[in-house]
Length: 334
Image (tube, rainbow, N blue to C red; front, side, top):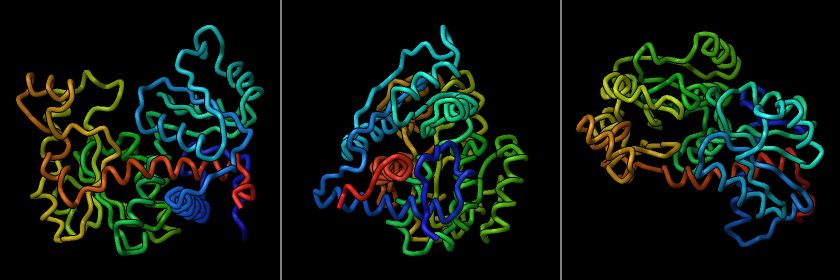
């Protein structure tokens, strides 16, 4: 049966079937090839989207803007709205739904993006919340397909570090949906919430995926993909000292890469990454704690194993696929 996502919001991968995720990935590959071939898109001609940002961003904002422009749409960037201050979230959603064809939200609480979808009457796309980061997972899956010579159902992904943040949550759900092997290499107190784990395991039972958690580095053996994220998410800056102490044993180094036993293993990171002293935050951490790299060693980040920048580019192609599938008209592209 043909997949039709027109008018749908994209809030979490929990809402999408494996077949629908497969459709989005196939569309992203197609749109990427079209862009590389210099084909001009028109699927979003006449469409206006608004990007609401309560958190800072590089890849998400740029990806939405370039993807929309590539397909003929128009963008408003909104970072100083009255939403939740002088105007209720519901009222803001109703106003924006009258003015725009689609809404992207990047911020803190998942309920915000859900209420925007409930009250706006137009597709709403989650650009990141504290709970989920679904557009990132599409880019990760696309990069894995480009870099690993196995179907997704045969891929083992190991996520190291803070496994209960939005990336840990979303990778677990994404892997479960696509029938992959997911393992979290993390301290037990930073494993995902048990309710979400139960949901992921229920999905895995239907797709043939596996879900595993461990505090022992041996869990990386046989991995096709090593993945990590920053140790402290936006809004948690006060936890730096505690997280450094807890997560230093879970840093991805060349020893961890070798422990996989897989010369073709790839390394992924959603970025930004604290792998050197090239950031003001990295230098502050060095001055306070004497460490030059956090979640991944600079050696791994710059190695042949790393696909972090392929992954960053693929944010744009997969976000384009989501907008085109839920809002656009592909027949205009010929």
